[in-house]
Image 1 (cartoon, rainbow, N blue to C red):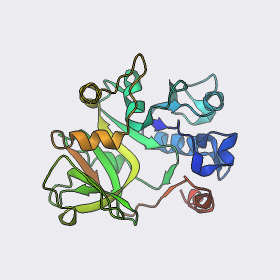
Image 2: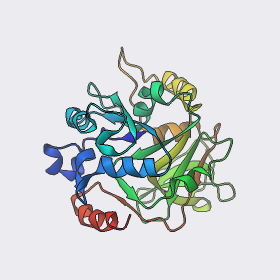
Image 3: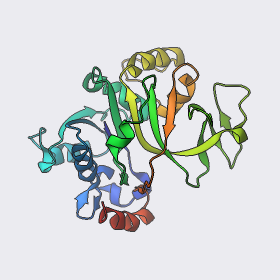
Image 4: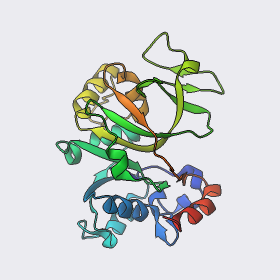
Length: 256
């Protein structure tokens, strides 16, 4: 699944007339960079969620969704025009495309990297509900992992001291602190667990699909269902989320 529905507010004014997914880097839109990377990794099918300037993304995919722009990656569209569902709600809405496939990859459209996706997938443990690509980089918000198992146990904002965890006695300083990359592998068993989560949290409102962040979901269920963190050796990655990241993205794109 490629997350392409975001508003791209940090890339304004570019995204005043263009969806973030179609922001060009190295002469190709971000969506094409991700699509070609997935195809090169042996992935043949993807679902792309749309909201902001959804028509432009659908036009880019074109009438031949089995091979848009010659990428070789078949694309289905998960339509979030009526309501932006955030990351967790977006995955749940796309269940019809993802259920039954075993593990599926989720990749933010604004992430460029040299990640060996096959290598990352090979690190997925049999009992994992999800496996998160993480890295050691300076930020304010970190995921907390058990140092022996690299199993997710919480989240912290080191600037404010806020901690979120299902474990009441958690000590952030005794945990491994890692930054999330926006790339993860998820078991399709997640959908039944998500349904339980949204009912428990009362997230259904009328006929609307539930709206929730995937990280809130992970932090809510990680005591019962294993969510692991995995690092990739030699990872080079950039989040093309701000105007000042565009030049760096152009440089990285030339080396991928």
